[in-house]
Length: 364
Ligand code: R7I
Ligand code: MG
Ligand code: MG
Ligand code: MG
Image 1 (cartoon, rainbow, N blue to C red):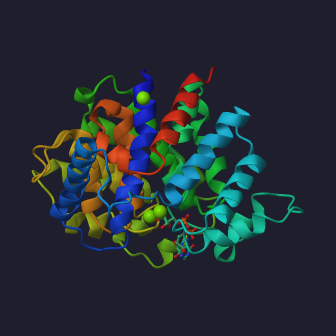
Image 2 (cartoon, rainbow, N blue to C red):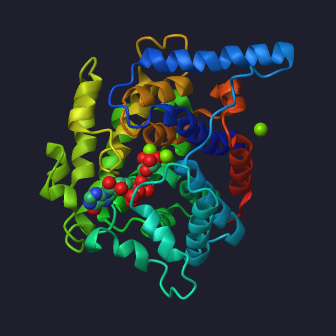
Protein backbone atom coordinates (compact mmCIF):
# COMPACT_ATOMS: atom_id res chain seq x y z
CA UNK A 1 0.00 0.00 0.00
CA UNK A 2 1.35 3.37 -0.92
CA UNK A 3 1.24 6.67 0.89
CA UNK A 4 -0.13 8.38 -2.21
CA UNK A 5 -3.49 6.58 -1.84
CA UNK A 6 -3.86 7.72 1.77
CA UNK A 7 -3.02 11.28 0.72
CA UNK A 8 -5.38 11.27 -2.22
CA UNK A 9 -8.20 9.96 -0.05
CA UNK A 10 -8.03 12.97 2.28
CA UNK A 11 -6.94 15.53 -0.33
CA UNK A 12 -9.65 14.30 -2.68
CA UNK A 13 -12.18 14.74 0.11
CA UNK A 14 -11.10 18.36 0.59
CA UNK A 15 -11.40 19.12 -3.14
CA UNK A 16 -14.83 17.52 -3.43
CA UNK A 17 -15.99 19.62 -0.48
CA UNK A 18 -14.48 22.93 -1.66
CA UNK A 19 -15.65 22.65 -5.28
CA UNK A 20 -18.94 20.94 -4.45
CA UNK A 21 -19.79 23.68 -1.94
CA UNK A 22 -20.25 26.16 -4.80
CA UNK A 23 -23.38 24.26 -5.85
CA UNK A 24 -24.74 22.94 -2.54
CA UNK A 25 -28.53 22.90 -2.48
CA UNK A 26 -29.02 23.41 -6.23
CA UNK A 27 -31.36 20.69 -7.40
CA UNK A 28 -30.05 20.76 -10.97
CA UNK A 29 -26.35 21.27 -11.69
CA UNK A 30 -25.38 21.00 -15.37
CA UNK A 31 -22.14 19.08 -15.82
CA UNK A 32 -20.97 21.73 -18.29
CA UNK A 33 -21.25 24.41 -15.59
CA UNK A 34 -18.97 22.55 -13.17
CA UNK A 35 -16.54 21.67 -15.95
CA UNK A 36 -16.38 25.30 -17.01
CA UNK A 37 -15.62 26.29 -13.44
CA UNK A 38 -12.77 23.83 -12.96
CA UNK A 39 -11.38 24.79 -16.37
CA UNK A 40 -11.28 28.38 -15.13
CA UNK A 41 -9.31 27.23 -12.10
CA UNK A 42 -6.83 25.61 -14.43
CA UNK A 43 -6.55 28.66 -16.68
CA UNK A 44 -6.10 30.97 -13.70
CA UNK A 45 -3.38 28.74 -12.35
CA UNK A 46 -1.57 28.87 -15.66
CA UNK A 47 -1.72 32.66 -15.69
CA UNK A 48 -0.62 32.74 -12.10
CA UNK A 49 2.38 30.54 -12.87
CA UNK A 50 3.34 32.56 -15.94
CA UNK A 51 3.00 35.96 -14.31
CA UNK A 52 3.62 35.06 -10.71
CA UNK A 53 0.38 36.70 -9.61
CA UNK A 54 -3.06 35.54 -8.76
CA UNK A 55 -5.87 37.08 -10.84
CA UNK A 56 -7.11 39.94 -8.68
CA UNK A 57 -10.69 38.72 -8.43
CA UNK A 58 -9.81 35.20 -7.45
CA UNK A 59 -9.40 34.22 -3.84
CA UNK A 60 -9.70 30.45 -3.83
CA UNK A 61 -12.22 28.10 -2.33
CA UNK A 62 -13.00 27.61 1.34
CA UNK A 63 -13.71 24.19 2.80
CA UNK A 64 -16.95 23.61 4.72
CA UNK A 65 -18.05 21.63 7.80
CA UNK A 66 -17.37 18.37 5.94
CA UNK A 67 -13.63 19.07 5.96
CA UNK A 68 -13.62 20.87 9.31
CA UNK A 69 -15.03 17.76 11.00
CA UNK A 70 -12.85 15.34 9.01
CA UNK A 71 -9.82 17.24 10.28
CA UNK A 72 -11.02 16.86 13.86
CA UNK A 73 -11.48 13.10 13.41
CA UNK A 74 -7.99 12.76 11.94
CA UNK A 75 -6.33 15.03 14.52
CA UNK A 76 -7.87 13.14 17.42
CA UNK A 77 -6.93 9.70 16.06
CA UNK A 78 -3.40 10.92 15.36
CA UNK A 79 -2.86 12.47 18.75
CA UNK A 80 -4.46 9.74 20.85
CA UNK A 81 -3.47 6.83 18.56
CA UNK A 82 -6.78 5.30 19.55
CA UNK A 83 -10.40 6.44 19.68
CA UNK A 84 -10.98 8.87 22.56
CA UNK A 85 -14.62 10.02 22.70
CA UNK A 86 -13.99 13.01 25.00
CA UNK A 87 -11.11 14.28 22.93
CA UNK A 88 -12.94 13.95 19.63
CA UNK A 89 -16.13 15.53 20.97
CA UNK A 90 -14.12 18.45 22.36
CA UNK A 91 -12.44 19.00 19.01
CA UNK A 92 -15.77 19.00 17.12
CA UNK A 93 -17.22 21.56 19.46
CA UNK A 94 -14.10 23.74 19.66
CA UNK A 95 -13.70 23.76 15.89
CA UNK A 96 -17.33 24.80 15.48
CA UNK A 97 -17.05 27.71 17.91
CA UNK A 98 -13.80 28.90 16.33
CA UNK A 99 -15.34 28.97 12.86
CA UNK A 100 -19.11 28.59 13.02
CA UNK A 101 -19.61 29.84 9.46
CA UNK A 102 -18.58 26.69 7.68
CA UNK A 103 -22.10 25.69 6.64
CA UNK A 104 -22.90 23.22 9.42
CA UNK A 105 -26.18 21.28 9.51
CA UNK A 106 -29.04 23.10 11.19
CA UNK A 107 -29.47 20.76 14.16
CA UNK A 108 -25.99 19.44 14.89
CA UNK A 109 -24.97 22.83 16.26
CA UNK A 110 -27.15 22.25 19.34
CA UNK A 111 -24.97 19.20 20.04
CA UNK A 112 -21.88 21.42 19.90
CA UNK A 113 -23.54 23.83 22.32
CA UNK A 114 -24.20 21.05 24.83
CA UNK A 115 -20.70 19.62 24.42
CA UNK A 116 -19.32 22.94 25.64
CA UNK A 117 -20.71 22.29 29.11
CA UNK A 118 -17.72 21.32 31.28
CA UNK A 119 -20.01 19.36 33.63
CA UNK A 120 -21.24 17.07 30.87
CA UNK A 121 -20.61 13.50 32.02
CA UNK A 122 -21.52 11.54 28.92
CA UNK A 123 -20.37 13.06 25.62
CA UNK A 124 -22.87 10.86 23.76
CA UNK A 125 -25.85 12.30 25.61
CA UNK A 126 -26.39 15.49 23.53
CA UNK A 127 -26.55 13.55 20.24
CA UNK A 128 -29.01 11.02 21.67
CA UNK A 129 -31.52 13.71 22.54
CA UNK A 130 -31.62 15.16 18.99
CA UNK A 131 -34.97 14.96 17.20
CA UNK A 132 -36.92 13.98 20.30
CA UNK A 133 -34.64 11.06 20.99
CA UNK A 134 -34.52 9.48 17.53
CA UNK A 135 -31.15 11.09 16.77
CA UNK A 136 -30.06 12.81 13.55
CA UNK A 137 -30.11 10.82 10.32
CA UNK A 138 -28.14 13.54 8.51
CA UNK A 139 -25.03 12.70 6.51
CA UNK A 140 -22.73 14.51 8.97
CA UNK A 141 -21.36 11.20 10.26
CA UNK A 142 -20.55 9.85 6.81
CA UNK A 143 -19.10 13.10 5.41
CA UNK A 144 -16.25 13.15 7.97
CA UNK A 145 -15.39 9.44 8.23
CA UNK A 146 -12.49 9.05 5.77
CA UNK A 147 -9.75 9.05 8.45
CA UNK A 148 -11.33 6.01 10.15
CA UNK A 149 -10.74 3.43 7.39
CA UNK A 150 -7.22 4.85 6.90
CA UNK A 151 -6.58 4.46 10.63
CA UNK A 152 -7.75 0.84 10.83
CA UNK A 153 -5.95 -0.01 7.59
CA UNK A 154 -2.64 1.41 8.83
CA UNK A 155 -2.99 -0.37 12.16
CA UNK A 156 -4.04 -3.67 10.55
CA UNK A 157 -7.24 -3.50 12.56
CA UNK A 158 -9.90 -3.55 9.89
CA UNK A 159 -12.01 -5.82 12.09
CA UNK A 160 -12.44 -2.76 14.35
CA UNK A 161 -13.63 -0.44 11.57
CA UNK A 162 -17.38 -0.74 12.13
CA UNK A 163 -17.11 -0.12 15.87
CA UNK A 164 -14.78 2.82 15.34
CA UNK A 165 -17.12 4.39 12.78
CA UNK A 166 -20.14 3.85 14.99
CA UNK A 167 -18.36 5.48 17.94
CA UNK A 168 -17.19 8.47 15.91
CA UNK A 169 -20.61 8.94 14.34
CA UNK A 170 -22.73 8.62 17.49
CA UNK A 171 -21.01 11.69 18.98
CA UNK A 172 -23.40 13.69 16.78
CA UNK A 173 -25.66 11.23 14.93
CA UNK A 174 -27.32 8.36 16.82
CA UNK A 175 -30.13 7.53 14.40
CA UNK A 176 -29.34 4.10 13.01
CA UNK A 177 -29.54 5.50 9.47
CA UNK A 178 -26.87 8.09 10.25
CA UNK A 179 -24.62 5.42 11.74
CA UNK A 180 -25.17 2.88 8.96
CA UNK A 181 -24.52 5.53 6.32
CA UNK A 182 -21.15 6.32 7.89
CA UNK A 183 -20.32 2.61 8.07
CA UNK A 184 -21.19 2.15 4.39
CA UNK A 185 -19.01 5.11 3.38
CA UNK A 186 -16.10 3.77 5.48
CA UNK A 187 -16.48 0.27 4.00
CA UNK A 188 -16.42 1.72 0.49
CA UNK A 189 -13.15 3.55 1.23
CA UNK A 190 -11.69 0.41 2.77
CA UNK A 191 -12.65 -1.68 -0.28
CA UNK A 192 -11.19 0.93 -2.59
CA UNK A 193 -7.88 0.97 -0.70
CA UNK A 194 -7.69 -2.81 -1.05
CA UNK A 195 -8.01 -2.92 -4.84
CA UNK A 196 -4.58 -3.52 -6.29
CA UNK A 197 -5.11 -1.08 -9.15
CA UNK A 198 -7.74 1.00 -10.93
CA UNK A 199 -8.15 -1.70 -13.59
CA UNK A 200 -9.33 -4.09 -10.86
CA UNK A 201 -12.44 -2.01 -10.18
CA UNK A 202 -15.49 -4.11 -11.03
CA UNK A 203 -18.87 -2.51 -10.35
CA UNK A 204 -20.74 -5.69 -9.54
CA UNK A 205 -18.02 -7.20 -7.37
CA UNK A 206 -17.64 -3.91 -5.49
CA UNK A 207 -21.39 -3.61 -4.85
CA UNK A 208 -21.79 -7.31 -3.99
CA UNK A 209 -19.12 -7.01 -1.36
CA UNK A 210 -20.85 -3.97 0.17
CA UNK A 211 -24.24 -5.71 0.03
CA UNK A 212 -22.88 -8.72 1.86
CA UNK A 213 -21.56 -6.53 4.69
CA UNK A 214 -24.51 -4.13 4.88
CA UNK A 215 -27.10 -6.89 4.87
CA UNK A 216 -25.53 -8.38 7.99
CA UNK A 217 -25.28 -4.98 9.68
CA UNK A 218 -28.80 -3.87 8.81
CA UNK A 219 -30.35 -7.18 9.83
CA UNK A 220 -28.42 -7.24 13.09
CA UNK A 221 -29.18 -3.66 14.16
CA UNK A 222 -32.75 -3.52 12.94
CA UNK A 223 -34.75 -4.54 15.98
CA UNK A 224 -32.80 -2.71 18.65
CA UNK A 225 -33.02 0.75 17.09
CA UNK A 226 -35.75 3.37 17.34
CA UNK A 227 -37.88 3.45 14.23
CA UNK A 228 -36.00 5.64 11.77
CA UNK A 229 -38.05 8.67 10.84
CA UNK A 230 -37.77 8.35 7.02
CA UNK A 231 -39.59 5.00 7.24
CA UNK A 232 -42.66 6.82 8.52
CA UNK A 233 -42.69 9.45 5.82
CA UNK A 234 -40.45 8.20 3.02
CA UNK A 235 -39.16 10.61 0.41
CA UNK A 236 -38.33 7.70 -1.82
CA UNK A 237 -39.82 4.21 -1.94
CA UNK A 238 -36.59 2.48 -0.95
CA UNK A 239 -36.19 4.66 2.15
CA UNK A 240 -39.02 2.69 3.75
CA UNK A 241 -37.39 -0.68 3.05
CA UNK A 242 -36.53 -2.66 6.21
CA UNK A 243 -32.87 -2.86 5.08
CA UNK A 244 -32.71 0.36 3.06
CA UNK A 245 -28.97 0.63 2.38
CA UNK A 246 -28.90 -2.94 1.11
CA UNK A 247 -31.97 -2.22 -1.03
CA UNK A 248 -30.36 0.88 -2.55
CA UNK A 249 -27.14 -0.97 -3.35
CA UNK A 250 -29.21 -3.62 -5.11
CA UNK A 251 -31.10 -0.96 -7.05
CA UNK A 252 -27.73 0.45 -8.13
CA UNK A 253 -26.80 -2.95 -9.54
CA UNK A 254 -29.95 -2.80 -11.66
CA UNK A 255 -28.93 0.64 -12.92
CA UNK A 256 -25.50 -0.62 -13.91
CA UNK A 257 -27.05 -3.45 -15.91
CA UNK A 258 -28.43 -0.83 -18.27
CA UNK A 259 -26.23 0.92 -20.84
CA UNK A 260 -26.95 4.28 -19.30
CA UNK A 261 -29.16 5.91 -16.73
CA UNK A 262 -30.25 9.43 -16.08
CA UNK A 263 -29.50 11.77 -13.20
CA UNK A 264 -33.25 12.17 -12.66
CA UNK A 265 -33.59 8.40 -12.04
CA UNK A 266 -30.72 8.46 -9.55
CA UNK A 267 -32.28 11.36 -7.68
CA UNK A 268 -35.69 9.72 -7.66
CA UNK A 269 -34.60 6.26 -6.50
CA UNK A 270 -31.39 6.86 -4.52
CA UNK A 271 -31.48 10.58 -3.62
CA UNK A 272 -29.15 13.57 -3.35
CA UNK A 273 -30.13 15.18 -0.06
CA UNK A 274 -28.62 15.78 3.39
CA UNK A 275 -29.83 12.50 4.84
CA UNK A 276 -27.18 9.77 5.02
CA UNK A 277 -29.57 7.39 3.26
CA UNK A 278 -30.15 9.94 0.51
CA UNK A 279 -26.46 10.64 -0.17
CA UNK A 280 -23.98 7.89 0.77
CA UNK A 281 -25.25 5.38 -1.82
CA UNK A 282 -25.29 8.25 -4.35
CA UNK A 283 -21.61 9.01 -3.70
CA UNK A 284 -20.71 5.35 -4.16
CA UNK A 285 -22.70 5.27 -7.39
CA UNK A 286 -20.80 8.34 -8.66
CA UNK A 287 -17.46 6.73 -7.85
CA UNK A 288 -18.41 3.47 -9.57
CA UNK A 289 -19.90 5.04 -12.65
CA UNK A 290 -17.03 7.46 -13.26
CA UNK A 291 -14.55 4.71 -12.44
CA UNK A 292 -15.86 2.26 -15.01
CA UNK A 293 -17.51 4.35 -17.75
CA UNK A 294 -16.51 7.52 -19.54
CA UNK A 295 -18.91 10.23 -18.45
CA UNK A 296 -20.25 11.92 -21.62
CA UNK A 297 -18.75 15.41 -21.84
CA UNK A 298 -15.73 14.42 -19.72
CA UNK A 299 -13.84 12.38 -22.32
CA UNK A 300 -10.65 14.43 -21.75
CA UNK A 301 -10.75 14.11 -17.98
CA UNK A 302 -9.09 11.46 -15.82
CA UNK A 303 -11.01 9.12 -13.51
CA UNK A 304 -10.57 11.26 -10.42
CA UNK A 305 -11.72 14.40 -12.20
CA UNK A 306 -14.66 12.53 -13.73
CA UNK A 307 -15.69 11.30 -10.29
CA UNK A 308 -15.78 14.76 -8.73
CA UNK A 309 -17.39 16.54 -11.68
CA UNK A 310 -20.01 13.84 -12.14
CA UNK A 311 -20.77 13.64 -8.40
CA UNK A 312 -21.39 17.39 -8.30
CA UNK A 313 -23.58 17.21 -11.41
CA UNK A 314 -26.00 14.98 -9.49
CA UNK A 315 -27.02 18.14 -7.60
CA UNK A 316 -28.49 18.52 -4.13
CA UNK A 317 -25.99 18.07 -1.29
CA UNK A 318 -23.11 18.54 -3.72
CA UNK A 319 -20.25 19.27 -1.30
CA UNK A 320 -21.02 16.18 0.73
CA UNK A 321 -21.72 13.80 -2.16
CA UNK A 322 -18.54 15.01 -3.90
CA UNK A 323 -16.39 14.81 -0.77
CA UNK A 324 -17.50 11.22 -0.17
CA UNK A 325 -17.13 10.11 -3.80
CA UNK A 326 -13.71 11.78 -4.01
CA UNK A 327 -12.46 10.12 -0.82
CA UNK A 328 -13.32 6.69 -2.25
CA UNK A 329 -11.78 7.63 -5.62
CA UNK A 330 -8.61 9.09 -4.11
CA UNK A 331 -8.07 5.90 -2.11
CA UNK A 332 -7.91 4.02 -5.40
CA UNK A 333 -6.18 6.41 -7.80
CA UNK A 334 -3.59 8.16 -5.65
CA UNK A 335 -2.22 11.70 -6.01
CA UNK A 336 -1.11 11.30 -9.64
CA UNK A 337 -4.67 11.86 -10.86
CA UNK A 338 -5.40 14.89 -8.68
CA UNK A 339 -5.07 18.12 -10.67
CA UNK A 340 -2.52 20.54 -9.29
CA UNK A 341 -4.63 23.68 -9.95
CA UNK A 342 -7.50 22.25 -7.89
CA UNK A 343 -5.10 21.61 -5.05
CA UNK A 344 -3.64 25.07 -5.37
CA UNK A 345 -6.94 26.90 -5.09
CA UNK A 346 -8.61 24.83 -2.37
CA UNK A 347 -8.12 25.57 1.30
CA UNK A 348 -6.80 22.79 3.54
CA UNK A 349 -5.00 20.58 1.03
CA UNK A 350 -1.57 20.72 2.71
CA UNK A 351 -3.08 19.82 6.10
CA UNK A 352 -4.94 16.89 4.55
CA UNK A 353 -1.68 15.59 3.09
CA UNK A 354 0.10 15.90 6.43
CA UNK A 355 -2.68 14.11 8.26
CA UNK A 356 -2.74 11.32 5.67
CA UNK A 357 0.98 10.88 6.12
CA UNK A 358 0.55 10.69 9.89
CA UNK A 359 -2.15 8.06 9.57
CA UNK A 360 -0.06 6.11 7.07
CA UNK A 361 2.84 5.95 9.50
CA UNK A 362 0.79 4.69 12.44
CA UNK A 363 1.95 1.30 13.53
CA UNK A 364 -0.04 -1.77 14.45
O1 R7I B 1 -25.90 15.75 9.43
P1 R7I B 1 -25.37 17.10 9.68
O2 R7I B 1 -24.04 17.22 10.27
O3 R7I B 1 -25.44 17.94 8.34
C1 R7I B 1 -24.53 17.70 7.34
C2 R7I B 1 -24.90 18.51 6.14
C3 R7I B 1 -23.93 18.36 5.02
O4 R7I B 1 -24.59 18.58 3.80
C4 R7I B 1 -22.95 19.47 5.25
O5 R7I B 1 -22.28 19.84 4.07
C5 R7I B 1 -23.83 20.58 5.81
O6 R7I B 1 -24.41 21.37 4.83
O7 R7I B 1 -24.87 19.90 6.50
O8 R7I B 1 -26.36 17.98 10.54
P2 R7I B 1 -27.77 17.69 11.23
O9 R7I B 1 -28.24 19.02 11.64
O10 R7I B 1 -27.64 16.62 12.24
O11 R7I B 1 -28.68 17.12 10.04
C6 R7I B 1 -28.90 17.89 8.90
C7 R7I B 1 -30.39 18.08 8.67
O12 R7I B 1 -31.01 16.84 8.40
C8 R7I B 1 -31.14 18.61 9.88
O13 R7I B 1 -30.94 19.99 10.04
C9 R7I B 1 -32.56 18.23 9.51
O14 R7I B 1 -33.08 19.11 8.56
C10 R7I B 1 -32.36 16.87 8.84
N1 R7I B 1 -32.58 15.77 9.82
C11 R7I B 1 -33.76 15.41 10.30
N2 R7I B 1 -35.00 15.89 10.09
C12 R7I B 1 -36.04 15.30 10.74
N3 R7I B 1 -35.86 14.25 11.57
C13 R7I B 1 -31.65 14.98 10.35
N4 R7I B 1 -32.22 14.09 11.20
C14 R7I B 1 -33.55 14.32 11.19
C15 R7I B 1 -34.65 13.71 11.85
O15 R7I B 1 -34.55 12.74 12.62
MG1 MG C 1 -20.65 21.17 4.04
MG1 MG D 1 -23.30 19.25 2.31
MG1 MG E 1 3.24 15.02 -1.47
